[in-house]
Image (cartoon, rainbow, N blue to C red; front, side, top):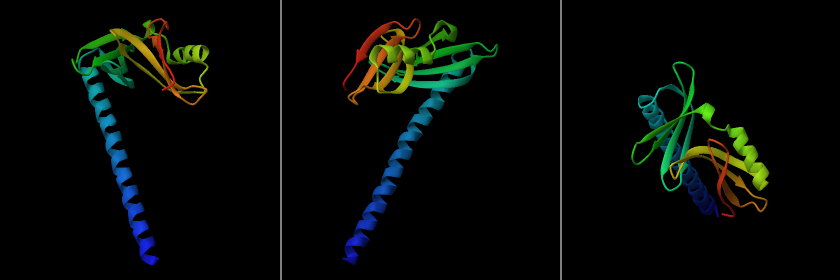
Length: 157
C-alpha cells in the first residue's frame, strides 16, 4: 500500500510539472509573437508606442496593434502574418470595443462575453466578439470595425 501512494505521488508531481512546462511554453509563444508584432508595427507605421494587441485568426492570421503617434493620434495597425503587409486606420474611424460588445449583446443575448479582438476578414477590418450562448456553446459575432455593421455569426460550436 505504501508503494502505491509513493507511485501515485510521483505520478502527480510529474503531471503537475509537465502541465506547468506546457503552459509556460504556450504563454511564451504568445508573448514573443506580441512583442515581435509590436516591434514590426512601430517600425512600419507612424506609431511610437503600443496600447493594445490582438491576434486574429480566420482565413488569414492578422496581428493588430493599437498605438499612438508622436502627435498623440491613436492608430490601428494590422499586419498579415504571411505577407507582412500592413494596413493602418485612424482609431477615430472605428467603433469602440464597448460598442461592438453592446451590439453583440443586443443581437445574440449571450450568456457571457469572452473576448473581443480586431482583425482583417476578407480585406475588411472587423471586430470579432466571442461569447457563450444560453446553451453554454461557443459563438462568434463578427462586425465591421468601421461602422458596426453585422458581417456574420458563427454559433453553437
